[in-house]
Structures are given as C-alpha cells and as structure tokens.
Image 1 (tube, protein in one colour):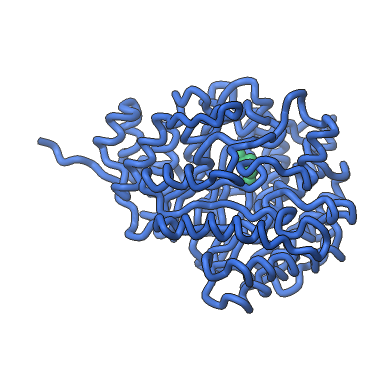
Image 2: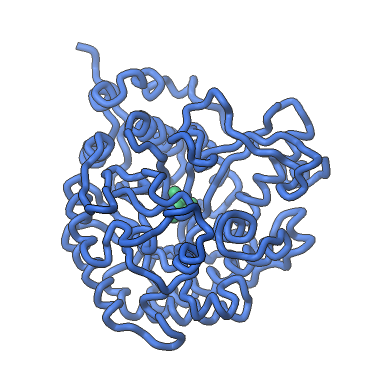
Length: 468
Ligand code: FCB
C-alpha cells in the first residue's frame, strides 16, 4: 500500500478559533457600534442583539472548542463593560471575564486576549475616541487595569485588533468615523502609537507575557500585471493598507508617501513579541483616473475565482489560499526581527459549508509550506467558532465552524467543525483526512514543494508610491 502523505505541524502549534466581544457577547449598547446600529446606518435589520450570547453562556461554546481539540481561543475584553463610565471600573464585568478565562484554562485552552476589537465606550467616543491623540492615556489606563485584574489568567495579549482596517474602514468605509483620507492616516498613526504605549504598560506588569497586535493583510494585485499603472496603484494600495503599518510598527517610520504626512512613532522598535496575521482575501486593482477617493484604483474580485457567499458586497469575497502564503512570506521578508507569527484570523463566509472544508485545508497547506521554508508560524486561529455578528454585514455573513441560529441560539456544528477537530487532534493534515473532506484537493494539497506557488514580490515602496 502506498505510504500516506502527511503535512505535520510543529509540536506545540496552537490550534483554535478567534472571536470578538461585541460580535459574540450580545446585549451591549454602550459602544459606538451599537449607537451606529440604532441610528440606522447599517442595512435594515442589521442588529447585533444577543449575538452568540457569550455574556451569559460562552462556556457552552468553549466546551465545543475543547471537543474539537483546540488548544487556544481568541476573545476580546470589552472596554465599555470594564469601564462603562469614565474612571468607573465595573468589578462584576471583570468577574465575568475571570470566569470565562478560568473556564478556558480548565479546558487546557490558552486564552488569547484582545484588548480593543473595534469597539469603544461611548464616553470615550464622545471625546473623540482613539482617533484623538490625547485619548491614548485612557487606553493605557484601561489596559493596565485589565492586566492587573486578569494577568494571572492570561499571558498572551493583542492590544489593538487591526489598527489598519479600523482606521480605514472606520474613516473611509461603512463604520462610524470621519470621511477624510488625511484624518484616516492620522488615526492609523495614533492607533499604532497607542499600541506602543500599551505594550510597555503590559510589559512592566508582565515581563514574560506575549504582547503584540494583529494587522489585516489584504492583497491587492494589478488587474493587468503588465500594466505599469495597474501595478502602481495596486502597489500603493498594498503600501498604504498593509505594509505602512507593518513597517511603522517595526521601525517607527512610515514609508513613502505616508511619511510626507505622518511623523515617526516614538519607541516603536521592539514593541511586540510576535506578528499577528489576519488574512482573508485579495482584490484586483485597475488604474482609474476618476477614482481619486480610492487612490486612483478601482477594486474588484477576479470573476472566475472561488468566492465566499454571493451577495455580500465584496465582503471578504475571493477565497484565495495562496495569498496566506504570500502574506506570511512577505511579512517575514520585510521584518528582520524573526519574531514568531500567529495567524490570528482566517476564514470565509459560507453558510452552506460547501467551500469551507477545502478552503481550510488549502489555507493550512499554505501555512505548512511557509513553516517548511523556515518561517516561524506558531499557531492558527480560525475565524470563527460559532456564527457571530459580522458588523455591517450583520447575520448574512456566516463564518462559523458551527452554525448559529441567533433567534433560538441553537448550535449546529458544520462539517468544517469536525474537519478542524480532526486536524487539531492530529496536529497534521493527513491524506486520509483530505480524501474524506475534499477529495478533489488531494493533489493540490500534497503537491511537491517545487510546484508550489512563487514567492510574492510586492513592488517596493518607492515604485508603489510613484504617481501614475
Ligand atoms: C476581521 C475582523 C473581525 C471579523 C473578520 C471577518 O477584519 O477583525 O472582527 O469581522 O474580519
């Protein structure tokens, strides 16, 4: 009998899922997202409501994660619960998080805790939120409080979830924020700086902790690779969205052309212990002189690509596994600190779960490929455990390994949940697993290394910045 092929992951590799307080807990009206919903800015009916009801019963889902053999779970602490009114600490909220983290520990699931996942308390929002430089001290004070209260139960912290997408989506996209490019870039800088300050505050309290943040990496490929204009605008998108934050976090300095507007960050070098990588999709970009608002690029998804659920307004649309490999490679190449990488989010919208099993396998094969080339990827957290409230897309975006009916709170594990469980328990992808869940992908998943995708070489910042 032919030997079974296998992609084995390193011992101790972290396997789990990622989630966020507002999207999972439910019943929170004290944040800007809730206000935004109430004011009717999202499509009719888009309401978080009870979400996945984690404020009452997260532990039931933690039990499902344990059954899946998960060894890590990413959740966030909701600032507006911990400090609902400026300077007032809610000890009952701290107790609730203590109970959740204790439950995870009991199940031998490592808590990975985000301290800011898009939402802010209304009292802060009314003072300008984290978009405002003078408000950074409030975040540092809150973070200090959380680590003092919960540091005995957690040593893996993400300060800010996706400073880049929070700045861009909040200020140019569909979320609360001022619509202005220059302001957006200043918000990005402020979020990066607040991370640095929070990093040192946590480091003082927990010298052995793993402290970092994650960025959202979205690839932008030129619609016509031979067109210099398409290449230039795609490169500019990549620089502004992905690499500016990565480089600033690493060196303190923003690349051209952002450095014309943004002053260097103070004390940035060394202010992280790992790179958190959130990856979902890519866009193609075509030069369009009429589209100044999007840096003269028009974005679209490759029409013949495999897509997430239709009708999602280009929401994390193309399912493109090779992109994860390209992102990991590029981060590693662009940073010299050899810090470990964790995939802190990766997933897809697929209510019927007819594309997700194959997509999970193919993305993980790309992670394995990166590891086999020496990139220190130490964990993979799938977005997400149970369907949750997907911001502006509401309940239309079904990203859970487990289906949730938000009206009845009934859970139904998808096939992907059992697949993910098998992978976690085996710490490997075996040929036999692939043959059962996505037989059509056996060859692509186990293809010889030489036939694997090329390394991505993004245009250098100077190329990217040259005006079309
Ligand atoms: C990420 C967000 C997360 C979730 C996924 C789908 O950008 O961090 O909250 O919405 O996208």
